[in-house]
Image (cartoon, rainbow, N blue to C red):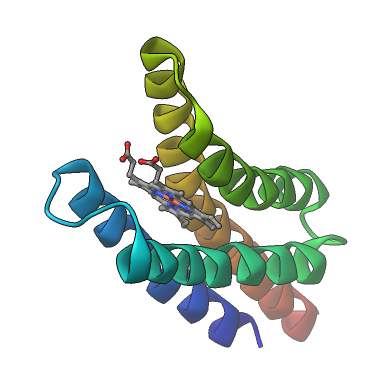
Length: 125
Ligand code: HEM
């Protein structure tokens, strides 16, 4: 299960990051199918991270709580940033979305490693 979840985070997260980079570089419009694909891929990554956080809660509680916060914040900030008019504020919120988005990938790697390591420990003892 951990392996499936980490693969889903990597796939969804990298697709979301790639589409996000294309939005940033103005290669794709921030609307329609590209935006929907970004939200679905990013949503799958965030949801899989929540499941990893639940799985790892007893072995890595602090990391799991931080991961769940980052997973919830990413779509929330992503949707919020669309309606901002003030340019300076919009820049800050865009940066926050990119940081939490990359955080989704980072926390998933840490959690998956901790979950697998604790299993190895349990088997050896
Ligand atoms: C791993 C998950 C994600 C990553 C790495 C990610 C990354 C990015 C990046 C790099 C951009 C371009 C930033 C820019 O134009 O300044 C972007 C834009 C956007 N993202 Fe995400 N994202 C993720 C998940 C999500 C999710 C789950 C949602 C919503 C359900 C979402 C909604 C948006 C929206 C609406 C925009 C366009 C905002 C705009 O330019 O007005 N993202 N994302």
